[in-house]
Structures are given as C-alpha cells and as structure tokens.
Image 1: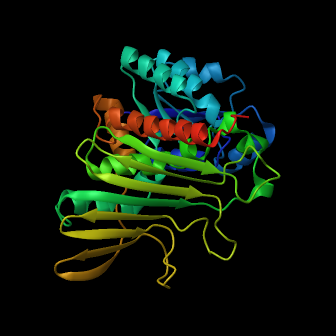
Image 2: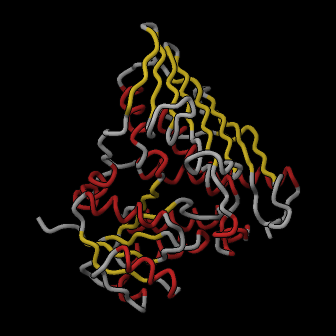
Length: 341
C-alpha cells in the first residue's frame, strides 16, 4: 500500500516539527513545504534536506497526489488554509489553536461537514505526551473509578526575546485561553468522556509584561459537563529560567476510587526524565515511568485518512475543545473589559 503523501504550509511555530515527525514515524512521505519567510524556510530545509520548498502554496494544495496538509502557520491564518485544503480534497492536521475566533470555527466546521474531510488538531500535550496516553489507558480500565474532576496546569516559559511579533498581537495569536488552554479543554473532554461542557468562569490577565500589552500572560477557566463532572484549567507564561525544561505541565484526574497525577515534562522531586505518572488507589501509591509508551496518534491518523474513520480523535471532540477554549476566551475578555488589539 502506497504511503500517505503530505506537505507542510506555514512553519511559523516550532510545533511544525512535531507534526511532521508524527507523520514520518507513521510511515508517511513528506513531499514538499511552503513558507513565505526566507529565514524560516532556510532553517526548516536544514532539518529536512531533500524536501523541496515550493514557492506557491497553491501548487501543494492543488496537487492531487498529496493527501494531507499540515500547518503551524500564524494562528489566525490556519482556518482559511484548512478550508482551502479541504475544498481541494485534502485532509488537514493543524497546530493548536486550529482557529482564533468562533466565526472561524463555524466556517471550518461547515466545510468539514460539506466535504467529509478530516480536520485534526494536534493537541500535543495529549497525543505526543506518553504519560497522558498511559493515563487514558488506566482511566479506561477503571483504575480510579468514575472521573469526577480534573485539574490541568499548563505553565510555559516566555522566551520573549526570541518570539516573533505576531506572538504578542492578540488578534493573530487568539489569546492565552484560545491558544494554550485548548490542550486542557481537549483533555477534560477525553478523560471525562463528555461530548459537551459549559464554561462556569474564566479570566485572563497581563501581570508581568506591561511592555507587550497584547500579550496575556495568565488565564484560567472552570468547566462542567452535563453529568456534573468539573474541571479547572490554569495556563501561564511564568516558568522561571531555573526550571530545566520549558514548563512543569501537570494534570490531576480525580476518580471515585482513586486519583492520577501526571508530571508531564519534569519531576521537581528529582526523578530524571519526563512522563511521570503517579497512581493512588485502595492498594497504595505507585510511580509509573511512561517514557517508553507507544504514541499511536500518527499511526491512527494515517489509518483514518485511508479508511475514513475517526480512531485518532473524534472529529466532534477536536472541534468541541476549540469551542470551549474560544468561549472561555470571550467570557474572560468580556469580564475584564479588555480590547482585542
């Protein structure tokens, strides 16, 4: 069977490398890329020698031999690219956030329903984080009973001097809840098994970066499913330089018979490496090293393209996670009186 052929359009966030590697690990064939920026294109070409740079993105979108377009373009530009690719008969994998407004979300949903194409957003804090995959297996197996609450924390290091101008422009990056917290929204839906949720409260702020007023450096939200399961999310750009990685991402999943805590990227208590899972149940406490866990998302997505299935992630959950993040963003900005500028 011939491998899936894919191309990359829009390389503005480093997450593009994770997206490419997901597909390469699954045996897909990388056949071309487009970047409008010469410096970004040169650095990208160094990492993927032999992959041609294509000057006109339309050549990749219209090439009938290419089955999937992947993109980590400027956040506000991803929805239009996805729509163009779907109308050309292609499936799409986007970096998060897949869109920056509710209007963009509705437009993408409409074209996806019309064309039957796949729109997958690579929520990497789930699909490319082995400890989260393992936690999903444990929850599914009933290790902690029924999930009643989650607490998702997404701290990040700002690295302000190295960020491009669009990163500080609210309409272009979408706001902190739209951007980072879409990860936690997807995980909340996944671990609770819910198809829907409401935003009970949300807030955003700029606490430490008055020189970049368009940046929101902290945000949080409180969610509830129709079944009464609740979740709290906090995201921020406050990771100090002393931490040996970009952020101490954590997730706690509370069940009726125990709980699981994930220390995704570092164990500040001193264990080496990442992907640390702690399971507490009636039998006791155990630490599980998840670094060697299989990551099935890429393999499943390639199979979905071939078989027209939804094994990597249900399409509805992909969109619902962004809907929740976008609604929380709007609620927080309305409450704070902030202007989208």
